[in-house]
Length: 125
Length: 435
Image (cartoon, rainbow over the protein chains, first blue to last red):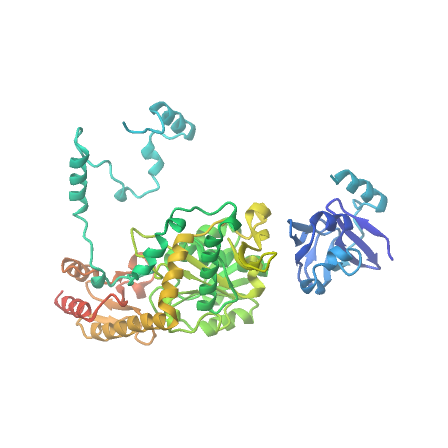
C-alpha cells in the first residue's frame, strides 16, 4: 500500500504513479457517524488543491470535501451511491471517493501519518 | 388606553440609527401614487364614527362580481368549496406556526406530506417539497437548483414567461451568480436550464416536449412552470420528461385578495431530490412499526449547511398548502378535469365570439390555449373603461409589461373559469360590441 498523506480537513491521499486516490480518514468517518449520501464531482472536473470537490452527508451533519491535490478527476467511486456505508466500514479501502490525475507534485502542506495522528488527537473531544 | 410599543423617544432613536428622518422615509420604496398622507379624519371621532367614515371610504372601491371578472395574468377567480375553509379554519392548523419540534406535530407533518404527494401526482414527478412562497419564487428556486446541479452559469427563458416571475429571477441572479438569457438562440454548453411556462403568460401553449428535448440535448435541465388546474387536461411535466416542475397554487382553493395569499409548488425527478429547496416531510415507521411523519433530508437546509444550503428557504406556506390539499382532495382527478374543461370550453366560446366583434381579433390565431388567450383590439383603454362602467372587469392589457414589444402593444388577455357563467359571457360580448 502506498504511503498515505493527510489534510487538516480530514481527507487522505495515496499516490500510485501520477494517480492520487482520495478519501476521508477513519477519524473523520467516526466523527461524522453513519454516512448516508455523498455528492461527488463529475469525471473530468479540474481541481486545485483545497477546492471543494463534494459533500459528505451523515445522519449528524453535512460537510464539504476538500481536495488534497491539484489535477483532473479520473474516476469516482460509483458504488457509494448505493452503499455509502463503505465510507464508515472501510474508509481507506472500498470507501475511497475519487481518483485524480495529478497536475504537478503533491502539495508541501500535507501531513504524514504521525503528523495527522497528532493533529487529530488534538481535535478529538 | 392604547398600548404603545415604542415611545416617541424610542422611535426617534431608531430612526436616527437608520439615518431616516421619519417613519414615512422608510416607505419611499412604495410608489408615491400608492401612498396616502393620512385619512383626513378630524380629531376626537369616536370608534363608531371612525368605522363609519372608513367604511364609507372603502365603499368607493369598485368590487367586481366574480362572474364578471375576465382578467387573469397569473391570479384567477375559481370556485372554492366550503370544505376548504372548514378544514383550514381548524385552530390546530390555523393558529400554529411552523413547529420547532416538528415531529411533535404529527398532524401538521401529515398535512404537508399529503400536499407533497398530491403535487407529485399532479405533476407526475418523483418528489415535491412542502411548498414555497409563490410561483415566481418557485421558478427562481428551480433555476438555482439547475445552476448548482449542472455547474453551468446561464439560465435560458423560452417564450413569454410571466414578466413578474422574470423580475424575481433577475432579483435572484445577482446574488446567486447566474445569468438570465432570453430566447432559445442562447441555448448551449453554458446553459444550466431552459425555463418555460405552460401555458405561457398570454395563455398560449408551448411545445413543452420539444423544449424539454432541446434542454436535454444540451445537457441542461428542463424546468416547466405549469398551471395546476390545466394539468386536469394537459400532459403533466413528468410525462414529457421535464426535470423540475413548479407553479403557482393560488387557483387551488385560495381566493384572490389584495394580490395574495399565494402558494408555490416545486417537484422534481429523484436525481435532483437533494437539490430541492425548503422543507421535505417523509413517511416513516417508529420502533413499534407505527406510521409516522418526519422532516427528512434536512442536511440540504440552512440550519445545517449555512451559506452552502441549497436555498435560504427554511419554512413553507403551510396553511395555503393545506388549502390546496383540501381543494385537490375534494375535487379529485375527475373534478379537476371537469374544472379545467369548463374553463377551456367557455374560453374557446368567448374567443370565437370576441373575434366577431368589430375592431377585435385574436392576437395569435394559430396558437392553442386552455382558458386564457390574447386578443388585439382598437381603443383598448376606452373599451376597458366602458366595460368597467358596466360592472365588468374585462381583459388584462399587457402592454405595461412589454414596452419594447410592438407586437404586444394592443394586446389584451381574457380568461374564463367555471365562475364565468354563460350569461356573464353574453354580457361581456354585448358590452364590448357597444363600446
